[in-house]
Image 1 (spheres, rainbow, N blue to C red):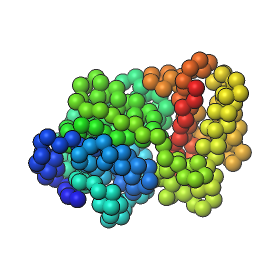
Image 2 (tube, rainbow, N blue to C red; image 1 turned 30 degrees about the vertical axis):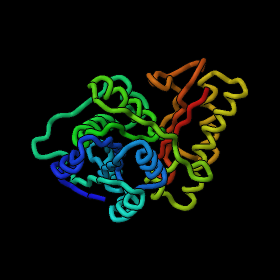
Image 3 (cartoon, rainbow, N blue to C red; image 1 turned 120 degrees about the horizontal axis):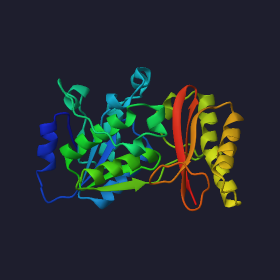
Amino acid sequence: MQVFSEIVDIRQARWKEPSTRWGLVPTMGFLHEGHLNLVRRARNENDRVGVSIFVNPIQFNDTKDLDHYPRDLPRDLALLEKEGVDLVWTPTPEQVYPENFQTYITVEKISQPLEGKARPGHFRGVTTVVAKLFNIFQPDRAYFGQKDAQQVAVIKQMIEDLNFNLEIIICPTVRESDGLAMSSRNARLSPQGRVDATWLYRALSNARTAFEQGIRDAQKLKGIILKTLQEKNIRVDYISITNPVTLQELEIIQQEALVSLAAFVDEVRLIDNMIIG
């Protein structure tokens, strides 16, 4: 496994064998089984696998959140080597955003609600760094998890609008045995917070059960989610039921819907979602 921080080294390693097909897994590090699942999928579907490890400062609108984001590069590299990864990019912020950097990418409509409303500037940071990753690695496929559903939708829109020549592969959310969606942020939870965090999945599951029993009114389903979370005094940021592609809020669910939420447990902001219908 080759590990580089310089862009020129990544490009040279990637194009050493021009005919090989590359899969890319973008990460912010502190890897968990969800990340490794993406790596394994990429390993199965490509000749070579590249991974980026970069805590992207411009997608954080809260400096405390950036400062507290967990990091453990030696552990991450050991996990990736065990999975047979070929190439890892571990740049510094100064390498990604050099002095006088002034070009940013904004996807307009679908980046505005949900995470975009709660975290102003977040998706501008995401799309900018992902576009840079695509240009630097030039992968044939890139792998993302369904847990970040809006991020996936925004990136798909970007590659369609800007004609990136690659395929986006979306993998199902990987969960702990008790249903909690795997996230690097889970490491910041207290033992009790870790237990309470499982109620996010329970709330989504309760809404799914109600839908399967015939409830189609989005407000009623949101009420079920809210009531479930209030049982544990979990502070809700938002609850949303939208069209999975356009992210437009639904009043009545007629076909498929994306049910998503963001909430604070131990002052750690967690997100989760579920497709119903």
